[in-house]
Amino acid sequence: MITLINKGLEILKKLFENKNLFIFTLMAAVVLLVMMQFKSCGDLKALKNQSKQNEEAMKKELTVEKNKSGFYQTSIVAFEGKIKDIEKYSEDLAKEIKDLKHRKPEVIIKTQIVYVGDTATSKNSLTDKGDGNYDLNWDFMSTDSARVLKGKSSFNAKVDIFNDNKYSLKILPGTTSILQDELKMDFVVGVAKNKKTGLDEIFVTPKNPNVHVNKLEGAIIPKPKPHDFTASVQFGYGIVYGKGNLGFGPYLGVGVSYNLVSGFKKIFKIN
Image 1 (cartoon, helix red, strand yellow):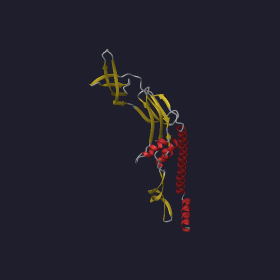
Image 2 (tube, helix red, strand yellow):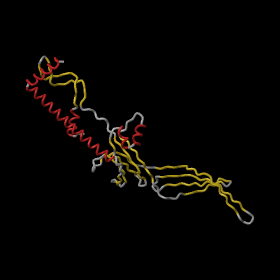
Image 3 (cartoon, rainbow, N blue to C red):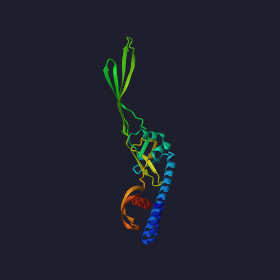
Image 4 (cartoon, one colour):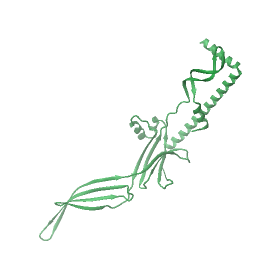
């Protein structure tokens, strides 16, 4: 141990004696410290933004406004965090994630859509099946063509006629069968940043004015960010020590690496 310490001190002594090596090492250290400081500030800002995002998301306030095409768009501030944190925002979403098999979502949305149709009438036709049995056929299509219903109602009707020109009508109700039941709803769902607030929002835009969004929840689950510092096998060019001297040259070894590209992107906010 003492030998190793003495060797380290010897290297430092030679480093200080070599002016060029000392300046190079000092500049590299300064650059590295500046990058670490920028990274720390960036992480702090990101944490602050996420805290603001989730504070608004926990309010679960729906915003309804018309988009440029005149359709009503419902939006809500999305929750952002790791999968284990989603339960704080919505137990329903947390359960949906747990129910997934071999998949981890990046965005999960749950919405409740209600269709409110207009009051309308349907056309009927009567089919005589004999022996007093009848089918009342009916069909309905909403004015927006989104809802289609077709079916038939069966019943039995018998008329008893008496000698004094009196009669009685007996109707026995049967069953009603739904032969066709269709409800078409077209809507757009997505994630977008609100330019006014700077917050990420989940939005739903129905293409039918009779479709209303009663409930909306959404969460964004960011992918784990790769570490800027990694342990690796290195091959490069830099300061090397050998035969009692310090100098510049190629080297091969094991050490800690810093991702310069990622670092510069964070410093200058390059996408």
